[in-house]
Image 1 (cartoon, one colour):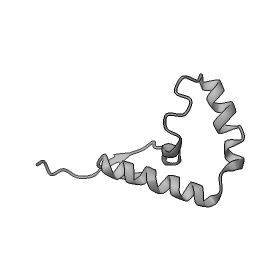
Image 2 (tube, one colour):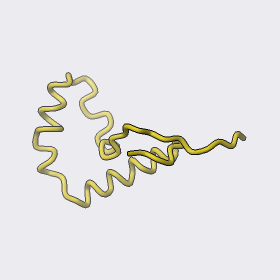
Image 3 (cartoon, helix red, strand yellow):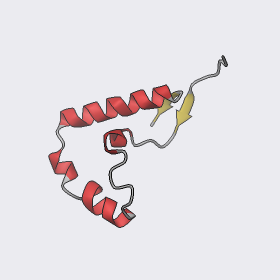
Length: 69
């Protein structure tokens, strides 16, 4: 077992943990039009974002990341 300090991730989109794998074969333009600028934002509720961020934070912690922003 190795003991080391927690890692710092300076660029993490924790909310995207729930949509991982969606559109893996899409171009950036398609992704932006469907997810980022599309209807996905209109379908989300605040509770959905809270859950997505919580799951993303748990994934980061599982990978050894203790700080992200």
